[in-house]
Length: 369
Image (tube, rainbow, N blue to C red; front, side, top):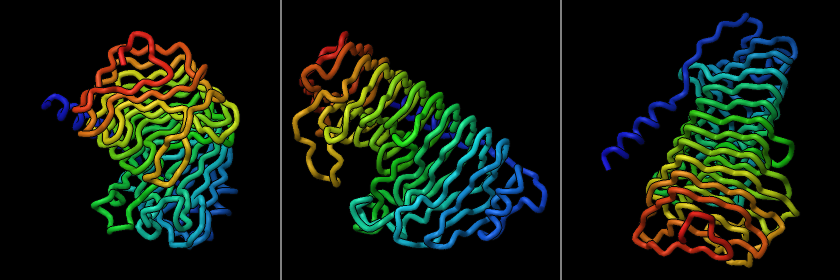
């Protein structure tokens, strides 16, 4: 047990974002919201310095090719009941970095009502739509709803720290906790290809990482706490050639979650690998694969019949270890007829007081359910 504790601490401190200090021409230093448009149009080395954004306004950062954008100090947002996003970043061949001690503060407590997107209007924090880009060292705090909605090609996201611990039930005031605060979501709207997400620490209340569309995606060296896990979210799109590896998931509802949405159109999940994943104290499931997912408010059961309109091919699990809390199920599989094919699971060992795994419709090769 001590070795697990030490490993967890090592993971946490190893993934703390790298510090940066950027020098820039004075004319490209933004201290007032009204200056943003002029600076992004005319500069390639830009610093946002302790910027406060008015309620209902969007920080639009459409960067020139070859630009470097730096967040310095506290970037914060004033209240407005809307869906956002609060920040949009777009461009080609760009770099976005967080300077030492910088924070992007979504000021989530102003919006949280315990209902997430099912309650009052709440803005998503950040929308990214880029090609050939690096996002390094961002420190994000208290997202009102989803933190980062991403569409990118040839994109690297690394050394992020997303901290929404203030939104946990039992920490936030009663009925004012956070919900639907996904960490990083590879969204369905545009292709995601050749994307790497690495060396990140995420404390949140929904999916730590969610992939709804993507090809050639690598997610590695993550520490996720309190989330809904490392998630493949099958919709009317294709998800293929995805690798999750070398990560720790603690106190999550699900450690690993693969779901297909029964109300969406046809899609495909193919060649997904989870490797070297440690799952500690999962609340509901260590591993959950379900082909009957409905997006419902928290607490409503997912008990409809499974569907094969989004088949899952070649789902591989290698070296998956950990435990679930009392009442949790180590492994849950619900596949439709002709919905799951050619899975191979090796060295999957998740402990719990309820050792009755639940596999309906399919059992992976090399695994006894």
